[in-house]
Length: 266
View 1 (cartoon, helix red, strand yellow):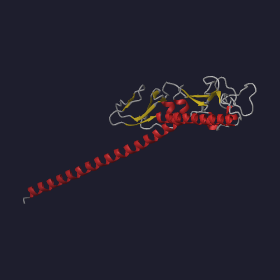
View 2 (tube, one colour):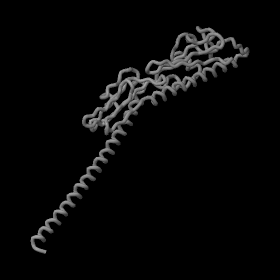
View 3 (cartoon, rainbow, N blue to C red):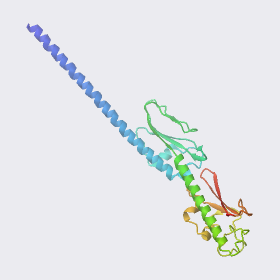
View 4 (cartoon, one colour):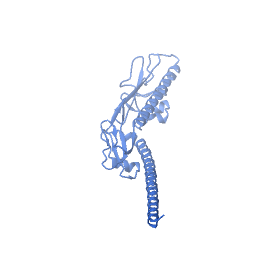
């Protein structure tokens, strides 16, 4: 092979090897970038999982207060009280007080914004619309508040059963078994006999009315699941004619009254 042609062949081979090497470098750079991106995505998702857990914990701690007012709580205050340190420009939005089946709750949305982010939480519906590619999480307080409502109703139900048992015990202890006597309240309100239930003409808390002490009520049953008192009345709203009854009521943080009646068995 002539010397010139040999030189051209060597140059061509070198050029080919450089091209191959450059392709390999670019390929590895692309893989490294993808691995780095995937790693960041995993770290950010783990962070959002921690944010969600912290928001749920905050909601549970603030259950008696968070839905007391219709206005949304300030996101900065929520983040601070939840102990969340914002990273990657974390944003938080809170909805207005929502209602489903008589349960008040709100939705919180947290997300990591992208450039030109247009993610938004509709405060009136609690519906979150994320921008394409945004990483986000939402928290709803509905299950927490519904659980508190269920526990409150369960406590009222236990109270009803205890009061009805006390009524039957008083009836059976009377040799006359006189069913026309209202044993949900004392015969003489000014001087109740031993074991008689006090007269509560208007609603009063179970502990301050003296009812809890006479019946021996479980201390857990003196308040609802939000810590507000449960009240009783054997005057207002109660039946003073057969079948006799005692009225029980309590109020949710958002102002809904929950009532139940203990009724004397015929």
